[in-house]
Image 1 (cartoon, rainbow, N blue to C red):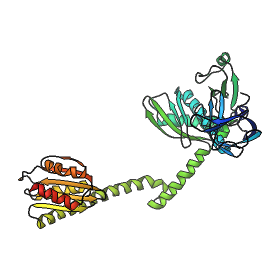
Image 2 (image 1 turned 45 degrees about the horizontal axis):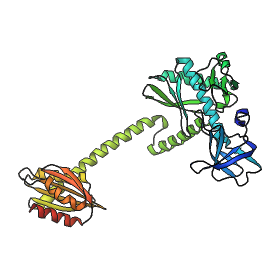
Image 3 (image 1 turned 90 degrees about the vertical axis):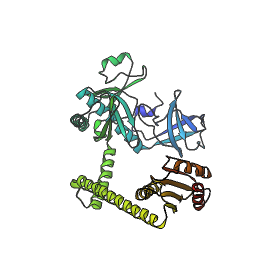
Length: 394
């Protein structure tokens, strides 16, 4: 572990090293292996560090076959001498806050309710743990969050210790360790003892705070989404800006925001219903107008009418005149839509009629003897399609 500087001191941001090798992996990505490194590789639920080696950006860090590989945007130009490494400290410290916060929150749920943590994810935008329980109440969440924040406020030390498998029995571990050698414990005295290979701050006070944001049941466990430290402040700032913007848009104070949005949604539904009724009235008027201009056979070409609109219009026509025959064609950019319908006193087969025309469009359709529709590519003009329909009918 001597070459892993992040285990010696998680706060080291710059270091020097020598390049042991530099080559491409099986996917053609350049990576360098150093004789020592402060870059933390992905592992234990914690993402890798980023930063630079010399002037080249480190975009990924993985430990493979016992070596820490630093994946680079471009290969190092001078790898023979000493190189300098610089950690993206903002990213590293964020991971330290979130990881330590996860330990604290998991320990709080276990101590209070005996809910074990069986999953952990630390992402750029979200942080989650999975609890081994099928139910979680508001009261339990508040109690666990309060205990976690009390531990943070007490600014307890966060210690790390390397132990052997035989020495594990001396510690009240929260869960059994998976590794059997090079075992690293992260300890918050008299609160949490856990095997972990991640980076953590020196004291709980540096976590600053924990806020549970949401939780949901997933099969036989509950997933909790939360934030720690600087992420809490960032989220608070983002949400406050959003709320201030909404108060201006809705002309309502923050305390009445929920009621204002509910009223807005209800008004939207009423407006949508009124618009729908108006559109139906217009379609009814259009159907009557088409019947007045045509003698039972209503054959029309449209531009950019949806299939649903054509279907409604056709139904209005045959409802008004049970002896009507409807042949509608609509050209919509590179697509062609057909709707064919007949009144109850007619006997033509609409499904067969549409089936005659669709091959001309490389199209597909469906329906029954009295009402059918289809669509395809606009390979020939809409007027020609309508004439083909009339020819078949006659």
